[in-house]
Every structure is written in C-alpha cells, then in structure tokens.
Image 1 (cartoon, rainbow, N blue to C red):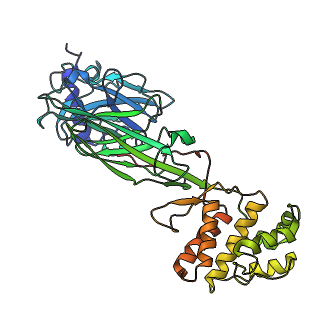
Image 2: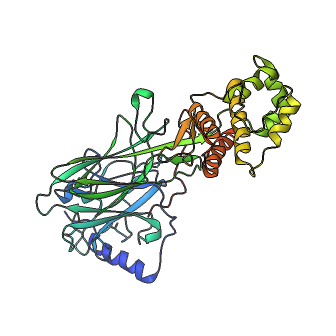
Image 3: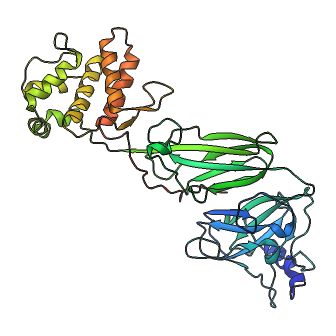
Length: 418
C-alpha cells in the first residue's frame, strides 16, 4: 500500500541534511530494544515483519524512525510524510520513558522513493540498523540505534540470560537460601555482532536475549552512586553453540557504608568513655577483654598499658603511629573489639576488604578480628600484611566499608549510551 505523498519522503530527509536545517533535539538517554511480537528481546528475525520496537527510560515526546544498512550510509526505510511533505513522527514515548506500544517496524517506515510500506533489503547480507530520534535528520548525537539481522537462511539461535544480584556474603555467587536477591534495572552491555545496552530483569521477568550462536562479551555499567562495588568480574564471556545453547552471565555487587564502627578518636574522648562506662563491666571490664585477646600472661596488643582507667587507655590509643605497624594494628583492633563488646557492631556483619587476602573480597567482623589477632601473634607477619589488616579495620571503624544488609539506591542517569 502506498502512503499519500510518501514517494517524496526520502527527498525531504536528504534535503534537510544537505541544507543543514535541523530541528533541535537533545541527546537521547535510555535504552532502545528490538523484540518479537510478544516483547521478547532479539537481534535476529526470520522476516522483516517480525521486528518490533521497545524502549525504556527515554525522554518523552514524539520520535521519527528510519532503517539503514549496518553503517548508516544507505536509507532502506524512512519516515512517511504528510500532505505538506513534512516527515511524520510515528512513535510516542510516554512521561514514564516507555514507548506507547510495541511498534512494528514494517508499519512505521516506508521505502525511499516510491513510499511503499516497510523497508528495502539490506546490501549488507541481511544486517540492518534502526534509528530513533526526535530530529527527522537523525544526527548521531541525538539518535538511538540498534543493529539487527534478518535470516536469509535458517540460523541457529541460543538464549543468553543476564542476572544481576546482591552478593551480601561477598562470595561471587547468588545464595537465595541466605536471602540474597536479584537486582533489576541494572544496565548491562552486550557486544559481538551486536551492540546492545539492556537493563536486567527480576525473578518474574528475567532478561533473556535470543541470539545467533556466537561468543558474546557482556559487561556491567557502573552506577552513578559511588558506594557500589562489584564482587564478580565486570566482563563475562559466554559462548552460545550447539553444545551450549543456553548461557548465563552472572554479575554480583554490594553497596558499602555504615556499620556502627567508631574511630580511635571516639574511643579516646569523653563520648567513648561514656559508652565504655555504660557497658557491662564498665571501663575495667572492657580493658580486661582487650588485654585477654592474647592471653592474660602475654598481652597481644602492642604496648598495651597496665592501668585500668580511661585516661591511660586513651593515651595508648592516640600514641599509635604507622611507624610501628603492629602498634597501629593493635589500636584499630581494639577500637573494633570495643564496637562489638558495646553492641555497636555485629560480629557477623561483613566488611569489604579485598586488600587483606586475595582472592577473598572481605570477611565478617569476627573473621577479620581473628586474622588481626593471628597476625599480631605471629612474629613472621610482614609489615605489608599488618598494614592491610590495619587499613581494613580502620576503614570499617570509619564506617566506609561495611557491606549493607540490603541494596542501596542505584541509577545510570549519567551513563553515556551511544
């Protein structure tokens, strides 16, 4: 079926490009997806009529669509025009950033020159690129693009699932039985024959891509919030072939923050003194617990004083310097132990400290303190190891590296998506 005056659509678009006339359009944020008629993501399709547009987090408004060859040099499908030869926008994005509906590509573009429904065959062996823009001249800076293929022969396909999870125990695995959860809406990138930016799904609607057999590189984006750290490699390689038609890329993350730690300065001042006095056993009892870390006969903590008053303990804390790393580690260990003994810190809470012992990313507070005790008791401990433990405890005492029990907010507003 021919569109009214559509045979001039390509002339209009090319005239705009040639004259330099453009309609101001901002850079397009968000993600553009290609799907089948049911909304399942795909990159290859059996027929041109099987390709649909879907998107999320896009700026609201009206959009134009065109189809080109893979490098964008040849127009294969262009926006139709109205009776005054003005290009018609066929796609609408609602205020929530979602496409108004699943748009069938064949229905929203026409062939250049003769204005027939749909788009021409690609000169690049079945490879196409769809462009989405609020500017009918489709500048690169204000367009979202997605490459796709039309099968010219029967091509084998596989399924790639991408899972993002909150890795509270820092072991690189999703432990559902321990309460770890899926993180939906995390931005990931899939390349190799395609160049897709996608958002992970949840347990009900997981992100599963239908892709031709190939080796794919999947990476995760870094959120705008700086307190998130990965617990798995940021790049994952998945091979889809006849022997492995279903593959999964796993990405773990945690967010870091407060956990009740208190610094050397706190425990040495009047606030720390009050906290110690209010605990079971008071100052004397707590100092006895610290002294007992290495046994009553041989105190483990370097230069630990004999006195049982807060003033003596305060002077010991503030006397620690990095010139004697064992002394500084002793002070940080004492501060963490006091946090546990006074109920401010949980022994089972996790601390992110990859500097301590590769390949482990962290330990519980109890495990970390025991490592410090063992290191101080071992005359062969290196300064480097003592310093790594000191840094881990210092960061936690400053509430920088406690793994939060539940996911923190995350978004990717400032992530540049081509």
